[in-house]
Image (cartoon, rainbow, N blue to C red):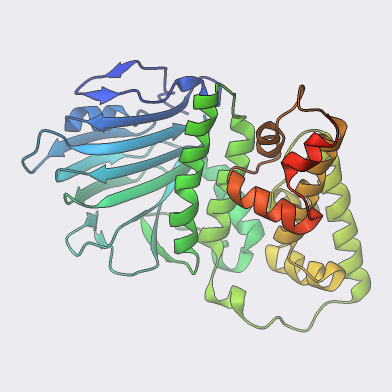
Length: 343
């Protein structure tokens, strides 16, 4: 991707490196207080951009930036009004949202809906007006990878992907608002502990979550159409289970996107098949498989050789509180208790 980010100790214009770039293998998380619009643009080198400060203020923004190589997560809390002008590079797209403000403008779009998510494809000119007090966030990806996965998950909605800046109405915007801080917090906590957070695992989690949010439509919550033959559902789910087990055995965290691509089925088909197969969604089933894999790691280890945090994060559990609660609900003991039994 153009303009790969290099480790920076102090950014021009007052940006301060709050978390070491070792958080994700050399790129990582930077949490900064920006004191010039120029510095705010420089903190996002993957996009050709100019920023102009339009209202008074010594501090321009508070910014969290997580660079995972092919995926970036950015959250900006604007302290002064700015304008952003630029063009997205080839094979680059973003999904973004902002807190509701009637004066916010994203080129010729406004944040006029509670569930509005903006999709900006490659080679798009943008002109963004961000008022002071507004919080914006975006995630960027390889467009080719993102579109291919979106078409697999929801071929009906993404058969003809947008070629210009568009507003996507999703039923899952609140989920994005909740999960994005967890990604940033997980990277920060990993750096604080001096542990390497696998960027490949993070990339998969961020991409899968963003895809499911953007491709979710009201129809996804509708009553399913008559189910397919049970034999077909069984075949699909057995193939999915075998794929998941192979990926977990290879120390990789499979996503729903991975499964759909590997099996050449849509997410809707996978959903109906798993409800017939085990009475739960593929997301729930995949999470249970990962919980079982963590339990196996803890049972095979000892407090001297493995930690609960390491085992959980290696299998994509970034929200450790939720992980611990799910683990206890399934296995009726805490992960710490499991590990202690093997000490």
